[in-house]
Image 1 (spheres, rainbow, N blue to C red):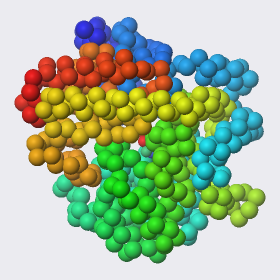
Image 2: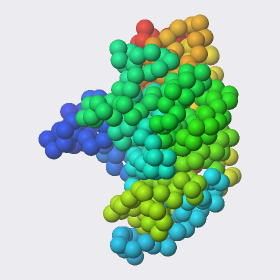
Image 3: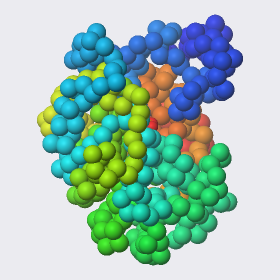
Length: 452
Ligand SMILES: Cc1ncc(COP(=O)(O)O)c(C=O)c1O
């Protein structure tokens, strides 16, 4: 029982959380690590496993929300970081490593002619949006309802609206987050995923004011519901028609393919944002794209967007990222994505055999399974179709706890996970088997059409 010690009154995680709550609001500094009744504190990680402060070991299917594609403490990455740290960690000067990582990424991603580094995916998105505005001289951006792109005010608009405020399905309302001026909503056009006709109308209506369209080809916030055939190409055409900068958010989905998510989807954006895996486990962001658009950052030309940042391209992050990218050869991607297919197949079989209506989404080395609340094969197509059952059901929290008990780390907000290279079929078979056990032990009234 891998949760027995965690549940004890004297559990170290409980004690740490009590201290955390005295020093930090809500006891954390990142909402994505919150877990009821208190988080499990990590002590160490190695390969695809994490050991918590109580000494329990579990297989990690979250990998710091997809950023650790080589798993924890990969010996080559650790060695590169130690070597670099001993030589100094930050200078008011560039270092050779940043040139190497910039070269590697511009060679690997065909549409990235120039790239710049920053410290997070959120910053990368902010810089890309500013670049699109500076390049076009227009104020607005378009983004998809439900899509998550980090913390920038404009990118946060309508990332999780509720039915009472979300408005017309063909012209979704622009909903700002608390703390953001309402005026921000006027500069964000919210698009419905997988509805080309509605998108066409909204883009056409705002064509003189739209600087950029922010697009994640497989958005986690929209349940990783795949774009319908032709949808991404259609968006590329519409943006090109009106001179709107197409910004691909590859922060999470760069792990889909050796050349990135856009390559895998067959589209060529003007700009893209990067993060997560390119930092090898350290804080990172990147914005890259065509020379023409990226020239807005060029201080030797007609500089339009100022780009500072005390720790941009810090050599420790870059050393870890470089080593990680070098390990991720085309063969390594092929193997990992093959395992992704294997686990998605395993999940489909599990749901079929248990007669549970479910839709298994995800691609490459990621999976996201939605339990659908009816039996009539209703297909999930967009953010709104998730609301009926998948996003709100408390079963996901209970399931997460059960899985922790069985030794697996999954998201508490859905059956979401990603793979790392130290994994093999044994870990994936274990995951699917444990999920089956978890379903049979949970209260069947919460689970649609479960047949034990
Ligand atoms: C698609 C996408 N864009 C942007 C971000 C923000 O990146 P960061 O958390 O590094 O700021 C994330 C983070 O999960 C993301 O998934």
